[in-house]
Length: 255
Image 1 (cartoon, rainbow, N blue to C red):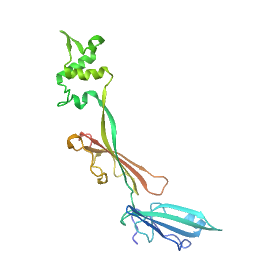
Image 2 (image 1 turned 90 degrees about the vertical axis):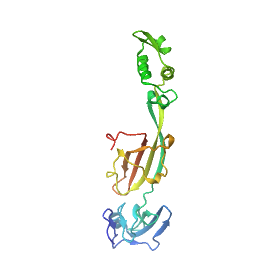
Image 3 (image 1 turned 60 degrees about the horizontal axis):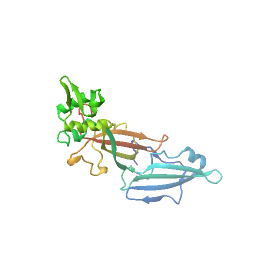
Image 4 (image 1 turned 120 degrees about the horizontal axis):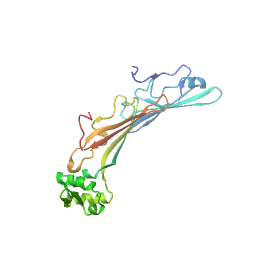
């Protein structure tokens, strides 16, 4: 057997033997699981278990997930090894879990679609300049009537600008927008140090059809998070990655 460059290969020892009742197979569409029970001196089992994340000689493609050792009679013991691989006999199963979420973001009210060109209350450049002057008005009586002082007396906001001002007077300074967030959690023998976040990247195909903006336009996807978690020195990493959809990104700031 050719030894994997990334996984250690466990061959046991002369004192450790496979139980006649082993192995036990559990074959499913998503992954194959094999349970091996070894017998031998308890001290030898404790001193020489297969490494989590490694392979066992004679069972190519299986990755050790769990090892349990218990004392039997006298100085004897048993070791139960659970290992998995992909359901089609390929690499060890990653067991990916896919999530699609819509995250709330607060944006300045002035940027709401209703006040943009083509919106119900589209604001002109003049409207925006007059709104800025109205917001600086210190007289509450003028302000509640959507008026503001000028060098020639006072002026009044346009109908569309008043729609914006009404909301400001009610304390509404932001509007909520919901952006798609895709999250994949999987198991891996390697961490994500070679697959960093902070760049534009299409999400994996496992998500299926991706969410789209109004009118069927595609989002620009940015990988925002890539986190690796592993308990102890052995075993596989839990990889959590997130992609967020944006209407557009600055290509000079986000590679």
